Image (cartoon, rainbow, N blue to C red; front, side):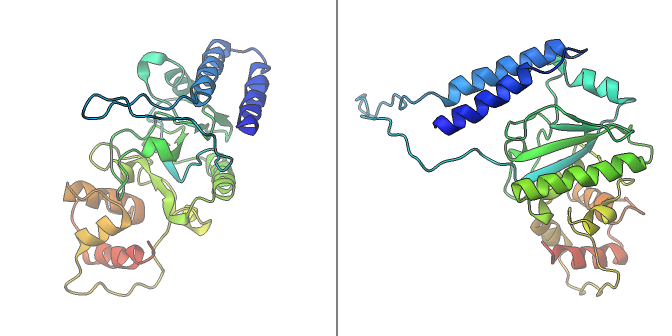
Length: 272
């Protein structure tokens, strides 16, 4: 416990010493909130419980020596759907928007770190991936400055790869656990869109991609089950199909499965 307090205290001191700038006020709010979190995790009183007869349940705090901080296990990639990184930074530093991300990647490749990796950002929202229904609690959100209709810049992609490599190594994030916002929330979100270079990401170990030579899917291939096994929410089959094709096909994002789509899915789902 003392080690955890020391680490958090050092982080708070370092953040408090950051230079003043246009986000000095929001930095101050961030620092105060982390101090509040520190108080919360420092609480050691057992919960006051009452059994079915109204009798208090006896309890006692005994601190263990075997624990650590929770680590992220997924990375969710977004595009900002806004016109500039300045607009996005403003959006993420206004309380009423209630949205945020751990990182924002500007068009020139500059990376803004906005939430500590061990804290939860309000980025994934409502969705489902496999059995996960609270992605914010187990993931890092990365927003890329892109309005959704333009190519990503070379600087963005180069520096994003560096960031993803750091996250994968630091937190031992599995290859399969790098997904898009649209994968997580196919009924609501399309980002990072069909222009995002998922094939290149897969070549670097961030998500999977289909092999160059595809074995044809069998005639009785159950593509909805395959989509579900990858992680997709198939409660709306058309939305799941579009999300899959936006990530793994990209040349066609219609809600129908062609033979090529089936072959790609048959190849890809076996990697998960």
